[in-house]
Amino acid sequence: MPPLPDFENPPVLEVVCGVQFPAIAGLQTRHFGQFWDQCKQDFPITHDAPPIPVVVGEGPSVELLNLPPLRRMMMISTDNAFVVQIQEDRFNLNWRKTSADQQYPRFEQVFKRFSEMWVEFGNFVSVSSAVEIKPSRYELTYVNHIDPGETQFATGVEANVLMFNWSILEAKFLPIPRSVSTAWQFVLPANKGHLNANLTHGTRVGRELMVLNMACNGPALPEFSLTEWFDTAHEWIVRGFIDLTTTSAHKRWGRKA
Image (cartoon, rainbow, N blue to C red; front, side, top):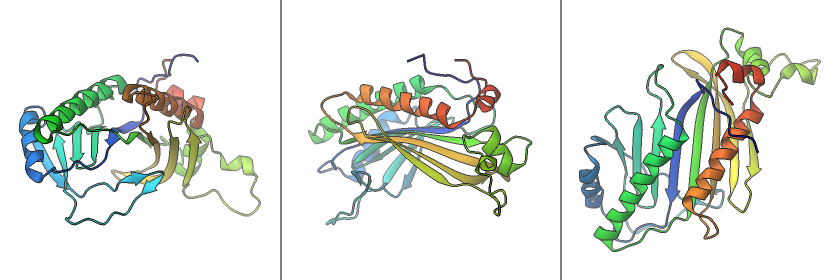
């Protein structure tokens, strides 16, 4: 395969690296505070949020609990660009674009920070709870906000950016659609899970756009390491993004390879 494509100005708004694992026995709210105390120099801002549902197979599961689940702790970097999310059965690191002139730092930097924080969290759990975390699932998600530019929204996004063009259907009755929503699922190689691509219509700061979410999810199996899984997921998301978008859009985003 040729080298992975790269863009000077990709439409990436957010990247999420995540690990799901069996709930840590004995984990309490105080442990979250103790872990934050180790990280607060780099992540001084905190918020609480409801926990993300556990995923079993390809969908969330329902579990009966003796106690309510612990909240999800969100630790945010000083520049608001990086967010570490921790709950009793999940660890995520997000990079998010917080201003128009902010540059995407590229996957290698996001994954490096995720890996460092994941190891630090694992070490903390091992010392505080005498438990070794064993991943059960991995997740890599890219959120892309695609602006049609100065062209009419319905035709501009479809014909100029996405591999979807209403005109080729030669509809005799229906007009150009006002918005589009669709989803695709692709099987990753070597039992590594699936790539899900979802396209929806949205708005941001009063401007219409299309939101293209591309997410890989799959089991953590002994046949491959965490790094190997994320390398595969990253490649499939990037090459899949190229397949789902047009050459003219690639030029607009400054494709370099």
